[in-house]
Image (cartoon, rainbow, N blue to C red):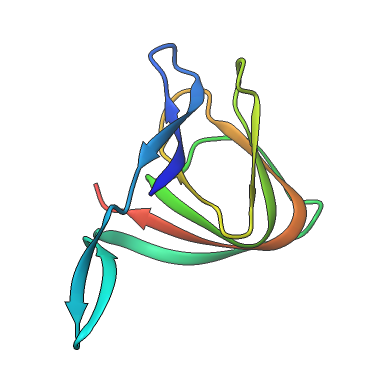
Amino acid sequence: MECIEIYTGLDGHSAFRTIHAFEASPVMFKGVAVSLSSPQPCESVLMHEFDADYVLGWHNPPARQYVVVLEGELEITVQGSEAARRFEAGAIFVAGDLQGTGHTTRAIRSGRALVVNLRG
């Protein structure tokens, strides 16, 4: 599956790129054919609830994270030509810009996101 990753470029600024995550393969599960990805270890999982006026200024995530937007809409801004991207309900993105200038997060519509902090 393709998703957007926020990463730190060689110039120390955060940027967006498309990556492939959670590649699923067909398997049989209790006699039923399903597509599953390989499991990925994580440190913690938390629920982030945000109001429509939520704004978090320039920051770096505490760990590499999968962010799954369940409700609402978030706008992530980085410096440079690809200034902002919006993520609506159903979107998954990776916050991986652990160093450098970081990014901002702003709610366009209130909602919730599942945040999965990955290991190492």
